[in-house]
Image (cartoon, rainbow, N blue to C red; front, side):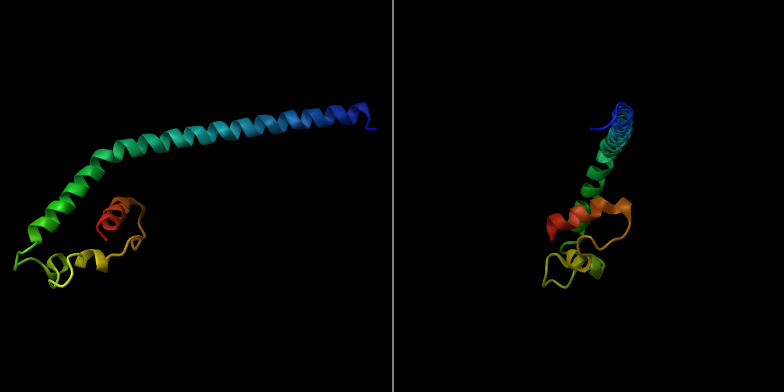
Length: 105
């Protein structure tokens, strides 16, 4: 049977571990709140970028003077989407581009 001192040490150790776990949970919750706030703040920009791309593609459709990258060859309606596959970019700030490409690919 363990001694009284070893039991006290074990209880103290468990309490200390619980405090550390609680502190880590609080830090994680704070980071999550910050990330959610940033995502909500970026929402108007994502909507505007979606609108901008939709207008860009719509304006180049049927336009003979449009760049080939936008207008394509006429064989595929999603020429730009085929050339920029989802997840192809390596930058964090263009996630909306990936979402837009996935939507139309």
